[in-house]
Image 1 (cartoon, rainbow, N blue to C red):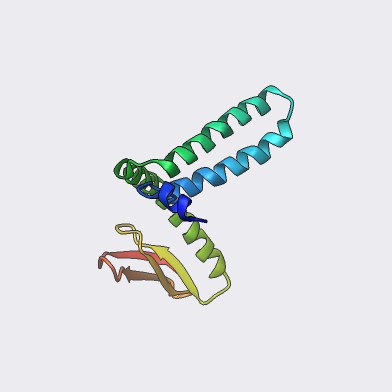
Image 2: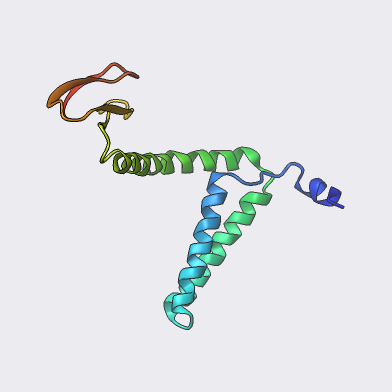
Length: 136
């Protein structure tokens, strides 16, 4: 029963992080478009959502795997700093009432936990061994 689908998908790229982002973007555009149903912004949002879903399926069904991997890598080079920043903010919020304080190494951006309430201390990054001074 599923043999035809396996044969159809053989040699095609499939899904990756950029495809997942495009799909989520499409869903948000469609939901946002519902607020502007019969107006000019609604028509524009609908057209943009069609372009996004076309790109999603184009990438998903593409046989040029090398180009799709390069596109995904470029996307990840842009997306990962945002993702890591918000991950750091989330950790800071979780540690807000704890006994540790979080810092990022200025050189390699490694997250470092140090004890709170010690005043100014010299912090050495365990990853790159860069030393910097911060107030805890």
